[in-house]
Amino acid sequence: MSLLDVRDIDSSYGRAQVLHGVSMTAEAGQIVAILGRNGAGKSSTLKAIMQLLPPHRGRVTFRDTDVTGWPPYRVARTGIGYVPEDRRVFTQLTVRENLEVGRRPAGPNGPGWTEDALFDLFPNLAERRDAPGRSLSGGEQQMLSVARTLMGNPALVLLDEPSEGLAPVIVSQMARAIARLRDEGLTVVLSEQNLAFARAVSDRALVLDHGTVRFDGSFDALEADPNIRDTYLSVSATSTP
Image (tube, rainbow, N blue to C red; front, side, top):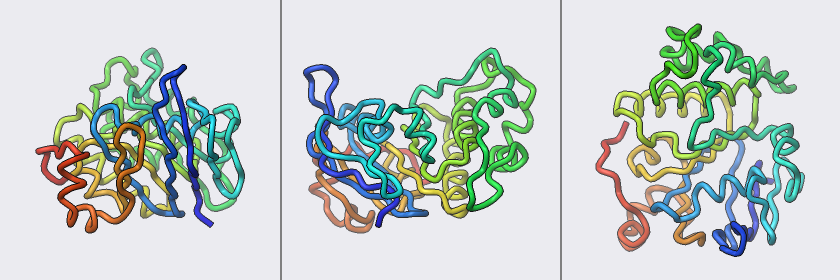
């Protein structure tokens, strides 16, 4: 069984349906990229998995448990971490205090993430550990948002547009950090518009258009299908991290 199994979900904002029969899976230790233009349904898919945008049809199964319709806090307690696009750093708290807010006991599979391990993952944060969140750059806030989520010791991390708006050097650091998460055995589902970034860090691609899945497969297969690329993706000029 897949760690995450999303099956035929429909979700709406009010009367506006944004997801139409979306299905996807993620295996343990796998990184899956959800690709598409603005408005394709990438962020909505992550919110539907987290039950921030509960599906009105279909189901979301995590660790063989149907979590559809659960409150988001309960979904988080099953082992799903969510890093939103807007970061939501506590600006009045220091970096260390932000990390402490996210702390949860480690599960049975290992010692879990510690402050020192996260400072090793994101050296920029180590240098700013006593700085308030409001003083951090956008890239540092993105790192802090990811690190705070990891302090909850999730088995699955949902990353919404992790490279958006970041300087190239920070994009490269983020790519290395995500690769490290795979090495640590975490499963990651990320939404991205930067195809080069997604290709560098991910095992599989899912392409959405207007809330409908248009492609699900390897990046090799995606690159071999120019029709999918040209029709549904805005290929970023950003170089591979």
